Length: 482
Ligand code: NAD
Image: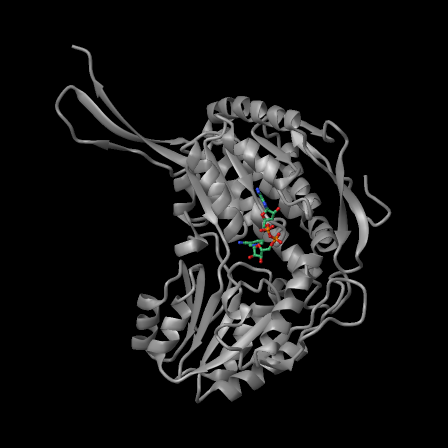
């Protein structure tokens, strides 16, 4: 069933049933390219959450007890359905989040691979036997931690939920996931693939609601054993504190403010083109988006000129329109943040080299923007922009650039450009970040871990490390009879 805008009717999925919330309360879903309401999302009551928790407790027993080969077959069937449905899922994502259709469809395809990678990795969640005294067996086993409570944002409507769902289910856990109320239909479409693949009831539950109410309830419940969150630093701190009160482990994938250091020996034009491509992907709403450009003074004009050229080549428009390379911001909050950050920087002496405002049309559009001369105390240099703003500053000494890069409390992604192996190794050693890319600004891959240091969070998603949070290690020493 779809609305007149071609947008699917959204339901929660609790205890093996698609359902509306108990009171029928809903929130509107807005297409950010048109500002039109295109649908509504049901909001859970406490009773709905309790049903989801009870289902997850039961679902954990069932799913954990399902033979690994059967679990693997069901999850692979879900991955195949995701691949088959990627084009439809991509269209839904563009309607609710705004990103260009090609980006959205690519994300939908990639999550099938994320799932496949985790399924195969979990098959190797080996324990070990430790040599011990005759008549005893000393072993270490890795067991699923139990029902997971997960909370994910709106910037990657498929990628965000799938990182949590694929890790949890592959590890043998059940999960209650609260996806974003702003991009709920993509999450529901992912869940539908698992349902249609034969996942047992209760193993995966999808809810929406008032975020603070839902998180407080799911975290405090004795049913949930792991809290997994992706989102902003302030909300992450709040949820980690709530988890701490009940001594529950948490996995925190939070924001950053990624520095890009372009050293004196780098190719400024190539660096600018690569950095600009990453900067404007998903309209800059990526936790690893490059967001502070520190360029050696000898290259800064060439770098800026090429960056401005790349920004002006971006085709801003409705993500469904042919040729669009950057959609609107996902919501009005981000648009207001771009206006505020730009005005603050300009009031402190920054120069807008291109962009700097919103086009005269409906939708939460903001032009790809390049600023120079942004002073260090401007909000834009301290607050994650999470939008298409690129502040470029010059440096003369690499040590000073590294100090600037490391001075914020964040440490998610960082980037460096240099032709020198020695300088690259210095950047690798000294940049405080969980993810460092040298001479490129490419995105994350399933095979390798992603995550932050400092206030950007803890725990890792992707790579073999992804399973660590979802498994507990149990030591078993067995004195044999006789
Ligand atoms: P926000 O801090 O209000 O919300 C961030 C996410 O957390 C949203 O999905 C929201 O629904 C959820 N959330 C908020 N309060 C919650 C609670 N008490 N319990 C559970 N979930 C809760 O910010 P926003 O306006 O949606 O986004 C703004 C900022 O958030 C951005 O500037 C960016 O720094 C950060 N953000 C980071 C990521 C990421 O991938 N790390 C994604 C989205 C947003």
